[in-house]
Image 1: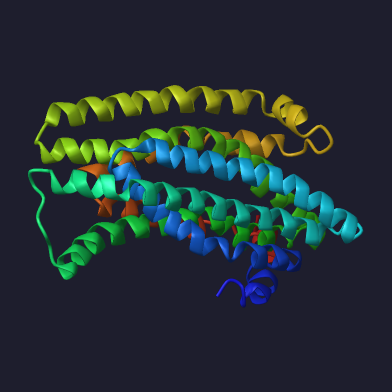
Image 2: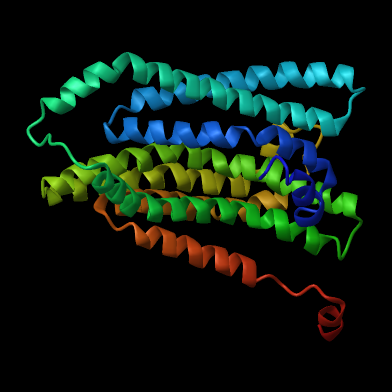
Length: 319
């Protein structure tokens, strides 16, 4: 759908025609990301975080190196066409996801017999009907999937609303440029602490789930409290640092395009809340309260979509 609908999405929904090639190049990654996510979830559930970490490290190494190589090659071939260069950079992301999936698949194949013997030797091992297994998976996965969809939707709301709103006050190319500051530089910087904290949220789910199965409330409390404390230690300094030093940070990382200090200051205030939200969601999912994170994200998306300021001409005249 993304591959064949890229033209409509780029022109009608995003109103950024130059994004069509990027969407086309990104579309194959959806399949590999979906399968890789299942395999990573499986290894995380077994508390084998090494497999996930190695695959993600390999993916990032491929992504970084291939992005540089492909962008340089396409720049030479296309006479520095930014549209094709962006597509090439996104293609590197797709190839990197394939590499991460390849590692997970090979790792699982080499360990499958060992895992099967380990499962059969456990005390609670028993055969279950496929329908029963599918039902159990759906009862857990549907609320978590809704949470992931809401999270992704929350990130993409700006792509549908920011450019449309800014075009009322400035030319389209300038509106796209301003959105690029938000979606490119600012979101990248504010997402960095979240990517560090996601490890604690991910590890919290199987740990709390196992403790709940053993009815060990003390372990649940200790692990949740420790994870929340760690999240605060990560999020609070990042929030304060980016809020105070937004200008120097952008000047250091983007010396030729350092605009966006005010946007970074405002966005940095969300870091601490989003990090705590990540950790609490992990604790709730591990405890079996799967609907609460989905409802919370649904409310967030609704507020972000509906509570947009009215920038119409009549509204400005009334003001």
